[in-house]
Image (cartoon, rainbow, N blue to C red; front, side):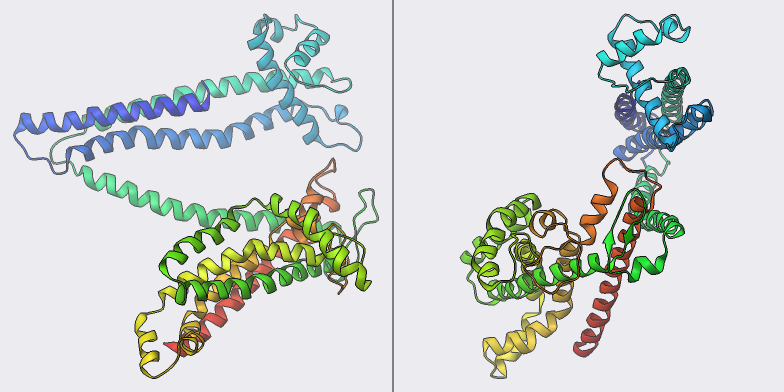
Length: 486
C-alpha cells in the first residue's frame, strides 16, 4: 500500500473514531444519568487524535528510517571492484535505485513474474529491454552485481512497505479501540484536545527553529569540508574567481561580494526613496478612493514572477541603457550591467518598502499628529519631525526586508547583469552575485565532493553571516531610536 493510501485509511479511521467516540459519550451519559465533563465533540476528538496522531508519527519516522536501512544493506552487496575508476559509490547506488524502480514498473506492466525475476530465469538482456520499454535508460554494461543489488533493494522496499502498513494500521486500530473503551462521563476530554492543540503549536514553533538550525548545520559542515580542500585565506582575500573543474581553480569571493552589494545598493537606491514617498503619500495625503486603488495596484509588482522581470531587463532596460547612455558616453557596449539589474530589481522591491512603511506610518498614534498640529506645525513638518521618527523602527525593518530580497535574487541578475565575476566601479559593466554562482556551482555533471562544488556552501554561509550582520546592525539602530522616543 502506498503512503498516500495509508494516510487516507488512517484519516478515514480517525473520522469513524470521532463519530463512535461522540456517540459512546452520549450513550454512557444517558445510561448512567451522569453529566458529561466536556462537550460530546471533545470525546470524539480524543478518539480521532489517538487513532491518527501516533499512527502518522510512526509513518513519518519509518519514511525517514527505511531508506537508510535499505541503502546500508544494499550498499554492502556492491563490491569495490565494480566502482568505476574515479567514480563514486553514490553513483552506483543511484543506478541501483533507478533499476529497482524500473523493475517495479516492469512487474506491473508486463507478464514477467516476480518469481522468474528473483530466480534468475530471465536473462539480463531481456530485463534490459523491458526496462527500456518502461522508460529506464541504462548506459553501458550494467554489472550483474548491480542487477542483484537492485532486486534486493526492491524486495527490501516491498517488505518494508508491507511492514509499515501493518504497523501503522495496527497502531491506529489498537489505540482507537482503547481510547473508545476508555470513554466515561468524568473523562476530561476537553483537556486532552486542548493539550494536543498546545503541543501542535509548540511543535510548529520548534519546526521553524529546527529548520533554521538544520540549514546552518548543513552549511557549516559542508563549508568545513571545503576549507579542508581549499585555503580559507585565498577564498576570503583573493580577487579572482576562476573555477576550473579539472584542477587549478581560483575561488576568491571578493568579486562576488562586490557584485552582490553593488547591485543591491543600486536596487535600494531606487526602491527606498520611491517606496517611502509612496507610503507617505498614501498614508497622509491620498483620499480613501485613491488609496483603495493605488495600494493594491502597487502590490501587484510583488506578485510578478522574477523571470518576467529578468526578461524585461534583458529585452528592454538593458538595450535602452546601452544604446542611449553607455555607448554615447563610452562607458560600455553590453546590455548586461549592474545598472540594468539594479534598476529592475529596485522596481521589483518597491512594494516591500511602500506597503510595509505605509502600515507602519498608519500605526503611529493619531494623538501624536494632533499634538503636532496643535503646536502649529504644518502637515509636512509633522511628517518629517513626528511621524517618520516615530515610525523609523518599522521603516528600517521594511528596508531590511527589501535588502534581503535584493541580496537573494538570482534570475534578474542572470538575465540582467550577466555572469562575470569582477571588481569594477563602472555600473555599465556586467557583473554577478553570490547567489548566481551558488546555482552555477551546484548544477552540472560535477563531483559533489570537489572544491568547485563545495564552494557553493561556503558562499551560502558567507551570505548568511552577512545578512545576519545587517539584521544585528538594524536592531542596534532600532533600539537606539526607540530609547529616544520612549
